[in-house]
Length: 350
Image 1 (cartoon, rainbow, N blue to C red):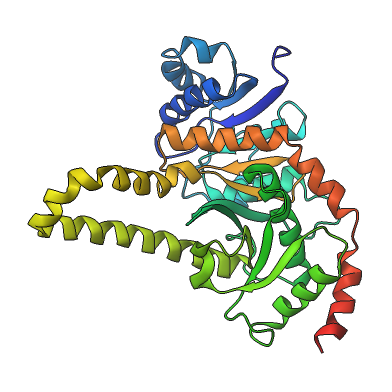
Image 2 (image 1 turned 180 degrees about the vertical axis):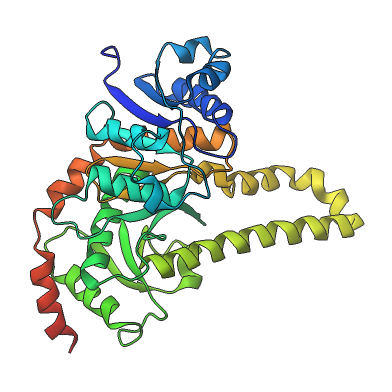
């Protein structure tokens, strides 16, 4: 595997329609990322049945057989003890240095648990977080945490801000991302104490962060920030609310068009606009939630996505590897002592 020095480990058995969709997605990703090779873990006969349809992809793939897989209903506490599943083996390949990132469409809880167990948290990072890229009216933003930590301290939130800032620079190409804490109001006195302390820590730290203060949920789509930071409980609810609202808007538009004869007549004139909006809101183009803060890159693809969606998750992983994302976080966290800043923030808040 020396011809290409960027290797991504793939849990070929993860997802609703694996390994077919996984292989189809890799075929798309391989064309866009000619410098990448793939290390596939899973049932070899089933993988080969799909891989045989892509002779060019086969040239950049190496298969490691596994009879076992993590199912959607499996509990994280059970799967972390089984080192023979395709998911565990794929993650362990990153630990061993055989790959630089792991991508799976499998069980989210299991992927997070095994990734934390095998890859370990970066020294001085207290907790890893789940982060995703989302669309706003003028482009994209990153948001974290989306469910890894239901409760967070001020230190956790400050670390999330730092990691989100680095991700926005690398994944979105924003030279100086605007970072904001998700809160119930923009005023300084609103919100929980942890949020106030986190704000003080970010302001007082030596981290090169353009901290803009607090952002309210209704401002998220309005291009008010490039990085939005929240605890996992709040972030997950915000994410699902945004996704649900987007689906509702699309359904209401479709319903209105069906019920209006004049709207139907206007479709040919609005087709270009409709297709552009549909593309911008296509969830497949934002597929791939990343577990950040670990000694290795672990990316979760949506379990029900299609080939295009899976290819986006793989391409995002490849791009972050090229940008030395994990090493950059490790380097940046060494520059600050967040625990010391946390003590200072207690006095600043009061």
